[in-house]
Length: 164
Image (cartoon, rainbow, N blue to C red):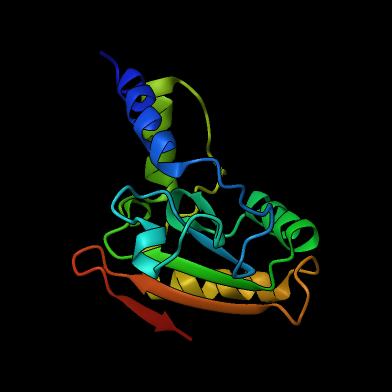
């Protein structure tokens, strides 16, 4: 049995528990969270969020990219969010490579030349949060009155530390 087949069975139990309650389209807290795809970070329970509370946007490293900004603009302009939380984490996979080494790896394994492409690796997780918060503050697509906060989640303890 594939994992997808297991997911289908598990989903049926979830749907039975979920019921037919209709949640509003707009997130209740008016918050969008930019975070990493890391499987050790379960954002909703870590932050005490329920279904329908916040938009959770994920990518490798939790980095602010053009596509992340696209999603945030939709989140704000169509769904009413007024706050953004940048949430990176310790022991991130984006800290384990450089663009140059990763480009060599892709060339060797896939035969594709990705030299010059930025996969947004970083060495300092706190600095990466600061960089991404600043990208959001400087974006003309993010209004100045939107609250932007940042934190680092510790994958070993589950605790968050604010980044200013």
